[in-house]
Length: 570
Picture 1: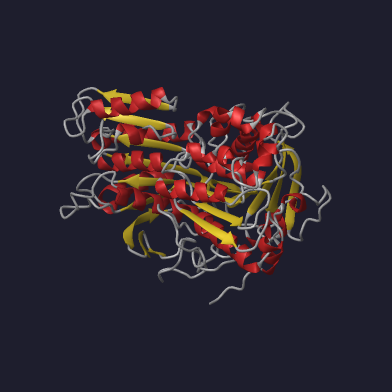
Picture 2: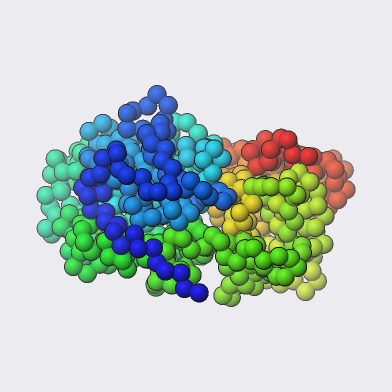
């Protein structure tokens, strides 16, 4: 069945001054609840405020689109919010629009520090406002596009995170960049744009001096400088007749994202300038909606550049992707999640999408959610049922939705080439998290993971691939390897982990030696990541079995301590 595109998308226009032309009394659409002028930095600047728009009626934690206004870093405000006007909130999204200090108030990096502070505040308040902390997208135009792109590439740049809520991640999971500047040194030397090289240009005001006399500062403000392969997907849109920001700024960003293996799509609007009518076309609104639906609602992920985005989402309007197929009664196979291709019957589930086919078990607690959830990962020779079911039956008593997949090293016939923390197994683990986040009775802000042995390898690899997504993680009889090419994640992979980790290891383990969890702890300590490592004297590799009750107790306490589980759970 075709779902009609939301007609309001056709009115989106993000020319910098038009996006901010509406005043603070902008009409709030029917069915939308507005929370305006929320202070996100206590005792801070008058610009440290944001507006948050929520559906009056919604089910489950909501994905969030954060709008960052343009205006040359000198003007503009949160009052103009295209995603609000485009109907996203009525279609099951939360929308935030943020102010940040302008260049007249403070020079760079104040602007990106403010944007990150707003994101951390929103994550800290996710439970209060019903937000899914694992599904934050950012969208901005012009100067706002620059800050949106910088948010996307600087998720692992700790120097930009200052102030409160530092226990929360400032990463985002999707970026839409409308004609944002990137490499200022190329910008100001592009024929026709040389006026931006003066010490009175918007770029100079941002940096505190002329660009070519402040190349180090320009590099620090350049989103390209901070690109890494774990950056979120990007949609970049630019007009080929832009008189304000040369199109080479978006071309450079797209090229470097692709070189790093980041999922990106670049769309040129023929004849369009710096915003204006070219950006208000229905096709552009559909493309943006399809991008956010695919990345934040329907769980499509991956690496590499996209050739097209026109069919990325099952339906191109904001409303698609949240209610697919619910309402059928057991034991008929049903869509128990918004994730397309997911079916469950009893405790057993299957998932099929493209070349990915997987299965496993899933258990839910009784009562009404949303519940926290945990991904349980088995070791070599185990399976979702043989390993995961016993663990899930205990953890479901804590009040957690429990999912366990079969990995490539399942059983005697397991794949010994793609086992452990392989890209395929991390893909399966990530898919499980998307399945969980698509469930209306799961709290997407409280996701945890536990794995034993090779399942621990997958847990570490998952945490490294999606920093800030997991609230807490625990492993038994597992760790890392110093270099690439092993089933265990390498030291360089572990450098990306930001999830609080509990490591439990038997002192006499000869299968995965205790030195491997000690190596993980060294990396986490060096990066100031919350962690704890406990060694059990006289115990070997199957510590999850020989010390079953103690292991469960420690894991449960760890999940509670780090916010993945409420202390009132059984």
